[in-house]
Length: 47
Figure 1 (cartoon, helix red, strand yellow):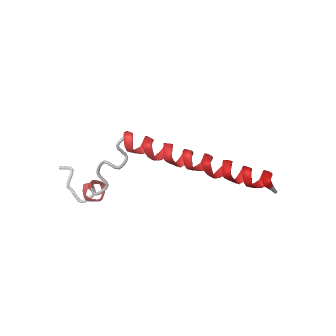
Figure 2: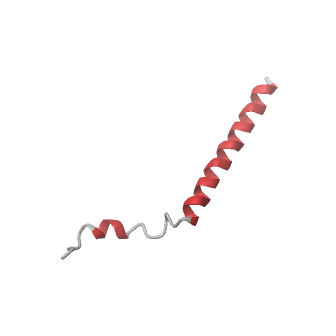
Figure 3: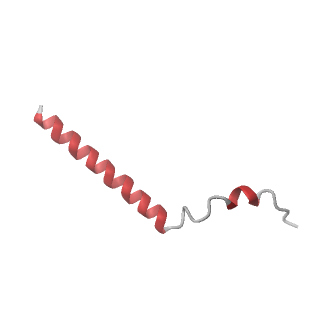
């Protein structure tokens, strides 16, 4: 029973590190820079 608890703790910490590193990567590569602009780009004329 203790082995399963250790496994679940390891699994939750691993997933937390993965999601945190994915968030930091997205923030550093400006994925959240301007979330409002793309919906207005399709309304503009290209001419």
